[in-house]
Amino acid sequence: MVKNSFISIISQEQEEKEENKGSVEFQVFSFTNKIRRLTSHLALHKKDFLSQRGLQKILGKRQRLLAYLSKKNRVRYKKLIGQLDIREPKTR
Image (cartoon, rainbow, N blue to C red; front, side):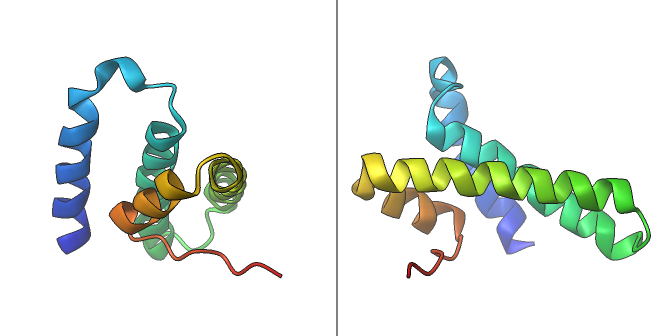
């Protein structure tokens, strides 16, 4: 339940910035919400393969956006990773 309250705090911050819906941070935030919702759904419905595929597609989109953000602005990337409590992917 801690994550849900944390998400609501971040969503309030994002709602204040209504004009920024196209920003990378907002897109990653919305993908993270979808990922968490689908993950809890798949915990109950293990054989829902269409939802599994949708989850994989959203994970790929979020991964590409995070890679783009890390290349363009490392400070914003680190801040977003910290806010959303996403583990930083290992680099080779």
